[in-house]
Length: 252
Image (cartoon, rainbow, N blue to C red):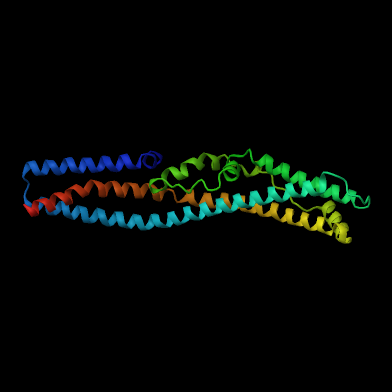
């Protein structure tokens, strides 16, 4: 199947050339009119098969579009978390808060943000996550019948090990205690709210990346449809010259 999907256009052209060569042979052999009628019947049957597989492949194309949208969503979630975490560290972690009462709580939140950022940095080394964070939509430029569009990510997804993916709970007892303390004082309540936003961004990021993996698994499960479509198109390309030959014979 891999060979067929990798060489779609050459295979279709080859089938067309073979059909054209056989059609030329029929012309030279002066076959009876019945032979051309049989060739026309073959064209109709193969054309029906091609139309049916095109309808089925349309479902696969919809799955591919859904995966592309999910990549965009995961990419956006990544950028949102990175932006929120960088802003939080710059605003609250570069210098100590003037009030000593709140310094330990703010440091706890800064440590958690650093920890979550470090986990996403580690995940950036994983093949699939690398594709998500560095390419906004790698499936936008689909190749003929989606063949090459999915090739580039196949190795990446097979090497994507959930056990290696670093995903942590953004909330724990320390951070919850720190958030509760900061919320009590209007001057630092905004810091607690910003951390809540970051925690939500991180949770969304993990959910979207794992959803991306699930979408890819669904797409891969139906990849055999592409092979069937290419084979059907090869048969149609093979029969097309016979239909053209019959039309020429009827005109003569």
